[in-house]
Image 1: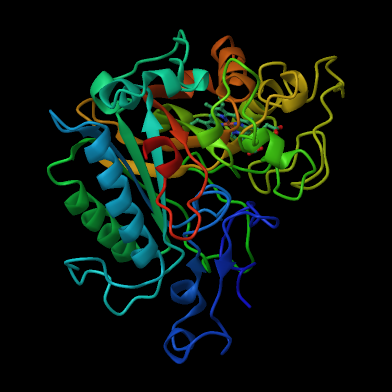
Image 2: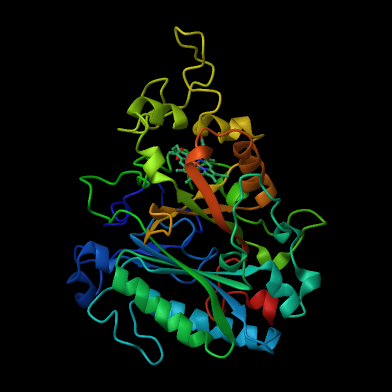
Length: 404
Ligand code: HEM
């Protein structure tokens, strides 16, 4: 099988009840599929307890798209749209044509395509479902370093597309955009990428555009508390926030984080490593060991200072420094050319997943905002918070438990 090698990342594939992945490599699949390379043949299941695209290994290509419902469209139109979208997602994730197919993905296999659907705060007012809006969708607090563009933030609906082939991802994007016709229109779209599976000799944690190994500290699906941290349990989250339709779902925080690469690249290697608290070459903590060695936050150097500086990003964001707050970071890098100021319009489409943003993103970002050594080199330019319901059961569409 090729499942383990499919993702060049530190993310593992959900073992119990997660979105399943079927790899049709080495003759184990159909005649057609086995003719494909392992990259093309890898299929992620649409149906499952959780939607695909959360614990799925990072893909090489991604599109994040927010839609607003069209004027006059309400709950009925939204339900019909989610039904169409789910049917399309199921088909294209299996490598089958969609209704009125464009042919863009002909010849390619599923290529680990995932499509993930979420609801923004405004969706609930637009559809008359305000009473069922989870408290977890309350607006994120403003942070002092925010430079957010409202036109590229939030939205009624959110779709995350990921695939290990750019044409397969674009094909899915076009099909979903056409499905939306008349019911919803694109509010914003962001395009991203990661390293391709197979580009490294063995599966490795990805690097971001600052060159850092990024993703090491992520919770692993094999951790005992992984599900509790990342997915909404059955029975809701206590009286106030309880929303049974979100069982098996998760909350996605999306931030377009521009990297000020011209400034960053002027720093010496030593300074760059102190900003994070890890070695650039292999991601190992500055206190020693290998990538997966825990940080020694209490170790002092000969200069009497902590070896991992007090403002190092990996110290400030560590769960043990934040009352256990944890999130699953699953980003794409972006590069949209050169901005008006002459610097690269590049950075991180930061996407993080958690059962409750107030136990994940919010407390960590609050602390980072107060003095993270990385802050002078990044700028948060757009933000979104979305409720991503659990996966659709066979015969169901995503969001059906809310919309029917
Ligand atoms: C860790 C980079 C923004 C939360 C790391 C690491 C790097 C990194 C290199 C160390 C390796 C690892 O554990 O993955 C960046 C860059 C950012 C960014 C370049 C912006 C462009 C953020 C934001 C948050 C965040 C906005 C959340 C509010 C974390 C967490 C860890 C981490 C939770 C793991 C800490 C641990 O488990 O010890 N980041 N980060 N990061 N980052 Fe960021």
